[in-house]
Structures are given as C-alpha cells and as structure tokens.
Length: 242
Image 1 (cartoon, rainbow, N blue to C red):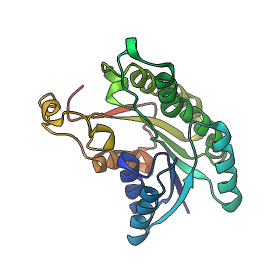
Image 2 (cartoon, rainbow, N blue to C red; image 1 turned 45 degrees about the vertical axis):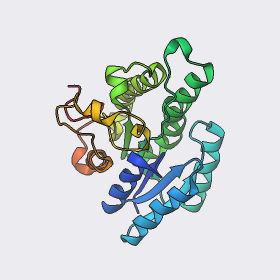
Image 3 (cartoon, rainbow, N blue to C red; image 1 turned 90 degrees about the vertical axis):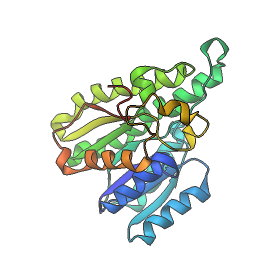
Image 4 (cartoon, helix red, strand yellow; image 1 turned 180 degrees about the vertical axis):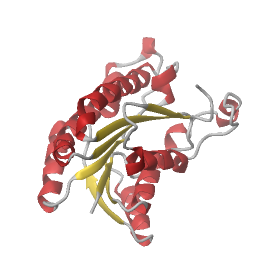
C-alpha cells in the first residue's frame, strides 16, 4: 500500500488532490482541522469509486498535535510510511499592512508556513530511510508575484518557495523530490469572495482554473515519471504571471 497525506484535504484544491491521488492508486490520508462533514464526504466519494481513504484530523499549526496524530497513524500502520506529502493547508487573513493585526500575521504564518516545517520534518526520516518520497508544497501566485492586501500570505507563500528549493538540495541524493505548485486564481471557497468577472480580464486564459487541474499537476509530481524534477516552482495560473 502506498500512502499519500494531504493537509487541508477535505475541501477545494486539497479535496481534488485527494480524489486524484486515490484514482492513481494511493491510499489517501485526508488531514483537516474541524470540518468533519466535508472530510467524510471526500472519504466517501473516494471509497465509492473503489479507492482507499482515511481521515486524520489535526491542527497543522500545532507541532504537538502533529506528533500525536502521526504517532497514532504509524502505530496502526507498522508496515507503511507516508510516501507522498502534499502540504496544502493554508488560510487567508487579508488586510492592508497598516491595519493588519498581530494575530492576522501569525495565524497565516502558522498555518501556511510553520506547518510545512513541523510536518515535513516529522515525515522526512521515513522517506529518506526508504530512499523514496515526494514532498509537494502548494504555494500561490501571491508568493511568486506578491499581491496587495496579502502581505502576510505573500510572505508565507514566498517562504514556502525558498524552503522548497533548499530542502530539495538536501534530500535529492536519497531519491526524495521536493517541488512547489503555485496556483493562480482557482475556483474554490478561498476565492469565492473575489470579483471573478473583473479578475478574468487579467488572465490570458480568460477564466479561473479548476481544482482538478491543479490536482493533475500534483499527481504527475507524485509519480515515478517525475523522479528527475526537484526544487521547482511550477505556476498554474492561465498565463497570468509568467
């Protein structure tokens, strides 16, 4: 059994990634923090299609919660290890910097950046021991280009890019790849409050992307065909920023 863990895997891009990796034969571990209903629906959809999925709720911003959850999972899967880790969890707390509150900065950093460090560090040893692994970090157009009103989110996602490039060099000899996927405007809950009609005018492709399109890219990076791709940041944004 090959295991893939997706953080924030109950909705949006994370849900699409979970569905796609299950189709590719992975036993999918769906992480989420509190939305039990959405997580169960994703699990049921995977199982109805003949795939394997399990739920692993924990707060990615808490190193203690990560340790407890991973230890519990490992104790019930003594012969398995997480081969593919998709660091997808993230939150937005948009505000102009002059008005931004401390908690708006720290909440975004904890969920979008610090969580990557806590969880990747915890799972990396088994990947290195088995000499095989995939770490795929979901960053953002905001981290590549920077967007006004998102100083916190842009900073966190830009740091994810730097961490991706550095870690890729540390683990490449052990056949572990580390890449980042940078979606532009994708039709999910996180973009539901944006003015889609106005923003589509800025996108050469003329539309928002779909979560399944991001999932297809992640699926390729998780595959054996992508073994020589590492340390890369792949934009998927309809040509908005190239």
